Length: 265
Image 1 (cartoon, rainbow, N blue to C red):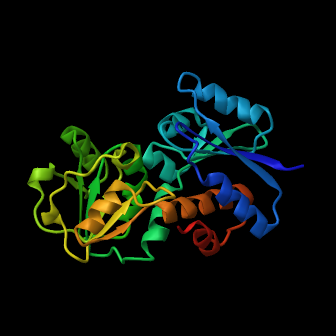
Image 2 (image 1 turned 120 degrees about the vertical axis):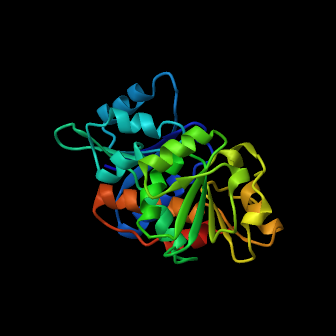
């Protein structure tokens, strides 16, 4: 009998997670089923409980309930505690609900294909759950400087204080160019164009969008490329964080390059 897994989010129709996990399953010879479940914001916790009560083995959680998933867990990993958000859930034999966050490690594994972050200047756009999940892993690479900017400056400041030595600044206060700019806002999901000044860019700046889309480019990637920069979407991060979740559930680490090639437009 196939083990039951799923990804929960809202919206969820665009998710590539079933394709990715089913690909990993074929690689490793593991029999599983992986489906999409749309979150009802009024009863998310009950949906999670029902899934596991009905024999489900593991859940991935995407927007907008990663913090709620963390809160409802019984045991969380250190990286999950730091992020205050969970994207991977599972129950053990004693019905204890475990939570982890694989976003940060997934991002770093993808970024290492393009840049060594040691002594680099990093600008992080956004101060929500996505930013929380990647800050500590980014700081572990020992960048020269990491600055957080957000449309609500108080949120950026609070996040920087929670993750020293990160700093915060308003967009108009930013000075000089950056080696890496990460979009951790929801702007690409709503087709918003960034208002970031091009003075932050050089021809070598890498602009990385945590969002992704199968057809064409996200607005942030298009903005980067139109200004002569390298624009990369979050498809590689998606595959790498999925591989980490797969490893947590199955104790087998899948190979990611072939899946990325299959997904490449």
